[in-house]
Image (cartoon, rainbow, N blue to C red):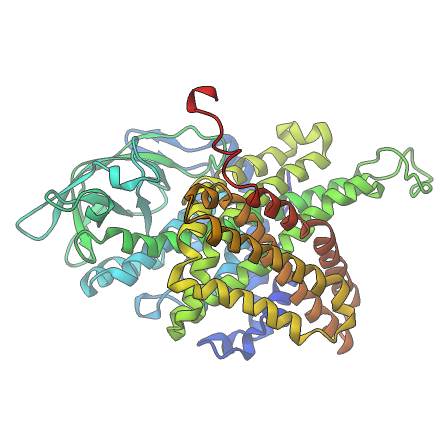
Length: 592
């Protein structure tokens, strides 16, 4: 069975060496002293290793079962969920007014990674609840917040998001679910939703569904969509549970992975719902939930890669195969361990340099969310809005790729279920699809986010990179290995943006056909910036007499690998973008 150990040392490095959280002026960050964050992460790590990780294969093999209208979760899930709730982990960064602990989102992000790596399917139950909590917290009325949030904070009640229908996924303007207004101010919601993660289960007293639907007589298309709270059980005015609502599970989807999470078809038959926010403004409210969810899915991408990488390293050190071409490293044994071979090293370094770079990128993104929410900083909000499709799209693409590379280290054993590596690949695969398929993320990045606020935020990012390079220009230890590659990659990214400006207006397909490459190029530049910053922080720690010399030297060496072997991909992506749309659009539909 695969093992998992929380990478708390690396997380502490990011929080305190890179982000310097306790010295930040973001509200609540002064509480994030190293001893405190260490205690939180170590405790989360124990829960992940001892409770959640052993259930990962259980969830994968047993799956969820629909019995007499109720979804039964895999063996041990209910007990584990109780431990999560008892420990207050679901309330970590929630509003204290509703029973939350009020910790910064960046700390909750670190804890979330630990739980996702240990058991992604399980963590989705509280993860979806947090997203629903956030949408109600941001857009619900005072009465709605008082009625629903306290028990969602504790996960006594869990939450979902209901968007997709059998005939519409990305194009939500095509939805048919209707919400008929009632005399008492409520609505009767009727329709079917599919692919609803954690749609029903036996681990909570109530499930609070957030459902997109159209009120008859409203505008056509996406402008006519509203958002509704539709509880599984009606909540009485005193907070007690009343009658079962008109919502039921049609079936549980049979999926490639995340079997431990109940992905349901949900049938709404005149179910009582309550409008959140303004009529016909449902997408604005839902995007509060989706943007948070997209960062969380980007985290899932590298978190699965982390778990797969840890096990690949163990296997590469234990498995004896062949001899080192430079001389035997295990002369008393029949062969040397796999890890002596350069191609295995390349494989593992790809994984390690991606995971650690992606973790830094995600933590930085979480700190931008904290800055935007706690300080009302519009620049931070604009920057994380720009970065969200990159975090989601790039990291889930690469996360799946790294999970399959970890599987490759095992050779034939990686293809055998008892070793557990296929689960990481299968579970990671969904992250490229849900919360907006990655092609849609690329279109959002190029079609909307680049031009947002007149291009202010992408220009701010370029300026950030430029300033970092300029400020450290005299640092010879950084210059050749980190600053020069970063400068080259940033220029590639700017050249791609210029190509879109010059060629996208006369033929939009020139921009759209290059959008996926641009998203990956942007991701590489972001990780390049993170690695340059981490290298600088590591060098400063060594100069300051840090005791853990091996850790910081390893960090610098890993960064050098990324800058030399991964960052040059920006040149390839630029060449693809500048080839335009002609080759992409050359065939008639009938010729595919």
